[in-house]
Image: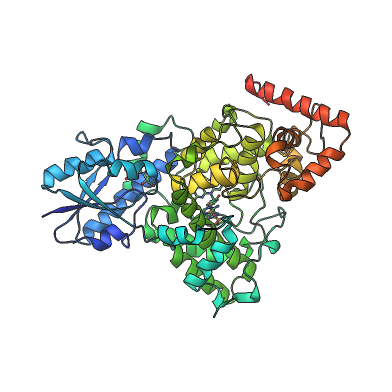
Length: 508
Ligand code: FAD
Ligand code: DLZ
Ligand code: SF4
């Protein structure tokens, strides 16, 4: 009996559990570009073009390797429009009644595959280091699910940067060396830009036609779209940028979009690169004396620590996670998130680069756009949908815990023991944005005051009941309480006035 083997757009790896369990001689691989996946949020055109190009090239590779592949393009007149619809159509055509799939990274699609019309076996996604069961066991009985403890278990499990039972360099975490502010110059020209081949060009024409109105620039399209290209980008980054990665991990610069970041999340999240293999290559760079421990440990922590931890949280917390809103925030997402003008240079720069490249680095996402949305009290669900749409590495399993949890504190502290908020001072310290901003970062009040300064204190005052007993926030409340009462009143009145102008659509 023929079985179908589902391969989704973010599962483009020969090591995928569904492919490993399949029979090349008798099973049919099903891959489909479908409207439901392409429109559940208004994805950035670069994200769709990347996904469809990589899917087409991966399908061609499977065929060359002897697999039978039923591939549906988006504009195929027979296209059923959804993944379950395509599976049904192919099942009928091939006389198949069974499907094997690797579990999707989103509750929505897991539920859609479980709708009962076909017998679909969903296998574990073994591209991750920790299984659901392992994460659940780790989480069980813990009062706080802190990443750092989970990360140490992952170091033991993988043996990465270990000497026997001890961490290399006698320390688990070298983060205190990784907080340098923006340097004067960056000696790295950023990720490799790949010239679109024939397959990519065909996809670009399709995406331009169907999704050209979505937020973001399709051209110039520079992403890697197969495993070899992705590896070339990784090798280039390890060679030229990894040694500086740790030092400037948190820095932001107006004219340097990529700094020393690896720009590989697109590729890891779709299966073009394997996370553990990436970490082993990075560890080799340390053992060969090419890169220092703070850079290498910092990077490996992002992958086997944060990335795995976020996925664990998403599946542990369940399908209602994205609708959490512990702080009761309900402001509409401001139009400048979609490219309308704003005078806040930091936000303007982060959104502009998101528009051109479907990319912004971690601190831009966390401490500029995320920080702003949280301080201004934007509805976290709208924030979540924005991040899911605009970044080419965004899939719900990783985006939601980063946004709902880490950035918006809408989960009430599952991910972060305190909210990631800051006034303008932090952005000024870590970036070169403030010196060319219409607002004055040093002004705490007054017509030119940096909005982050006003909103920061207003947020703390608004949510005093929630946070004043949080021991990590005691200092912030002590500073607020020591402020002259009249000054506090001015700050709150000006914050309300600024938010009102934002709500009425004024350019702020
Ligand atoms: P580098 O800075 O070079 O880091 C190396 C790798 O570590 C990344 O490629 C990524 O695989 C991993 N990593 C680092 N931090 C995280 C993290 N917090 N969670 C998961 N993996 C991490 N990452 C996504 O992959 N998809 C998302 O949708 C996403 N949304 C985010 C939303 C917010 C609000 C925040 C604060 C962070 C988000 N991140 C997301 C994490 C992080 O910003 C990106 O992984 C990183 O910017 C990707 O760029 P890079 O490859 O250059 O990473
Ligand atoms: C993101 C995405 C897009 C835009 N399009 C497709 C598609 O047409 N076909 C497909 O198989 N996958 C696509 N994806 C990725 C899925 O949305 C992703 O597999 C789920 O969200 C689970 O992570
Ligand atoms: Fe952003 Fe404030 Fe600095 Fe302007 S002054 S760039 S708004 S932090």
